[in-house]
Length: 186
Image 1 (cartoon, rainbow, N blue to C red):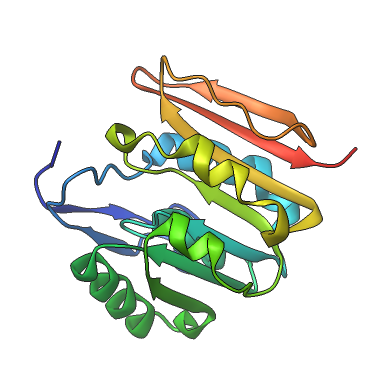
Image 2 (cartoon, rainbow, N blue to C red):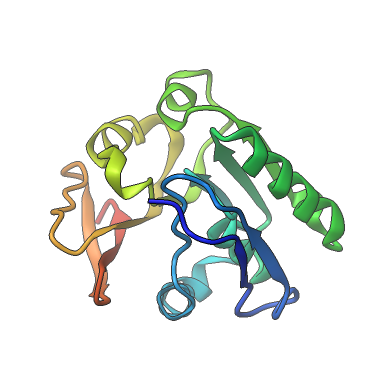
């Protein structure tokens, strides 16, 4: 389902209040402000200096929010060329936006490609009608650090089961979504 074009805002950090464009694109459904605020409150102690991987980046709300709040760098992976160009435009206009790298690629194909190093925080929030959670989660292992964090967002009735070495840290729901934050290792 596509939605009207609009924008979302960065909730906290140095870019607080910055509006990010949200195109009218099939399957694009940015994480709500309320959910992002909760997520980043959970992650705040882990963000300074973190390397972040935002698969299925869409509007870039998760990746840019992480950078705004102190992440060292963010790699945003998005398949749609129009959305990639919007992400690059956003990175160019933000002071310090060069910490964001935008890669135009299918997220699953990207995960099969050579590594770009290991990441401390990974966001997995694919288009809901694509059913890509299991395939993406199954390929993450070589991409993440030993004590990485994993955020997953899915439809309310969709179960989310990361690989066995991930432990649930916190979770929540909205009227339409489930979201969970996992920690790798002990």
